[in-house]
Image 1 (cartoon, rainbow, N blue to C red):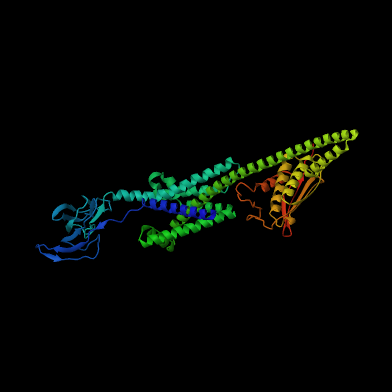
Image 2 (cartoon, rainbow, N blue to C red):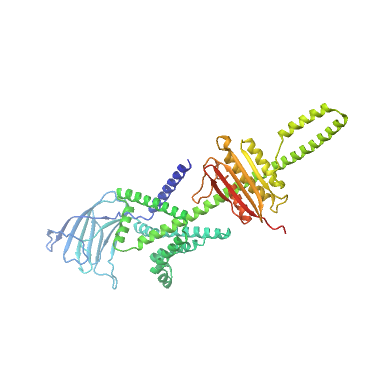
Length: 553
């Protein structure tokens, strides 16, 4: 179920990313909806007023013609509001729509020093159509565009095109800026937690370069001082971005990171291929853009492809870093919850042990009183009542018999409690604990270590079948300056480990269980030791450690 949910969430994330990209791409497109007028007929008007058929195959701005010409075509129906646009330089031009003159001009030459042709723009309301006629005479064959290239341009197309071109630069820069802020925030968070991730510095530099480099190259000329623009738009800046990303990858050699990066690359490649195929099927602009990039790549022009790849890599690394931080927080919260539950359980166990010890002391006093009563009965010669009391004492002792394992009160209480639980679960329990009455190790640490170790042993042994094969053997002794602890228990042969070989809990809810082992490791580390786990044969598990006993001074 969890794996299925993870796949569903991944698919939903990918779908959301595609949806966002699809919506944003609507704002960077300019439909090529300029309508060029096709001249259905063309004639040359002779000096005597007669007309002679005339044809020309292409447009030219240095026509080798002279005289007067008439071109006839149709303005199609269903056009939106817009303008008729055409060049007038070097022509004596008259334009008629359904026989009505809508333009007339004579333009002999450009303004001195200008290389642009003069243009005419005639506004037309929505739905305008009809027969379009252009009568022109060539006044200057060196600067005129012939035949007249009349086209219909929709209203606000120039504004739309300018905005779309600006968006094409701004959207990637905005995405890189978001990654920059995200990376910087993660880095500062690491400093606050005193665990800074220094590998984020080259990623931060790369995101900074990606935010501004391409934007400065395309638009910095209009907004920045010339020396700043020329410096920041140099190709070396792009090389610096690549080197920064390469350094980040070298510094992140963690297996988990490369796993996530590989998954992201696979998903991205799949999404790119799917979008490309869909766009190709409908002759969309996305497929055209990809084909354009591939054509540039084939010509040895790598700048555009390099930019998009580095932008993808920086964004992906930023998302992986954010995911790792979020997962680390979730794991930390779960670990805290588990440790709280574990500490509560240990506290409750120890309180139960204390209560059991107090109860044993009370029984001791009760036995003492019974012995006093027996002495009185003996002195009075009341042997019958003496026999009854002794029979009752024998019954009580059989039901409450306990073994004293060691002189150390804390360890003895823990072992007695474990022995009682083992008896209840049909587990053969043996313990050897040759310890002094006082150990220079706090009771809380002894309880945490021993209770966790014995609880794990009891749980594992209780799963063994048949019950006759359930065994636990504990040996605790002081050897030189160390407290040596050795615990063996039978188990069913199943051991769960993670990819690093670390033991995992076999309980049903690992998010709030499995911290006993971690607590034992921390106690061992506190006393300059480690916890070793091993197996003997197929069905015997061993846990052992040697705690360095602090000096009593």
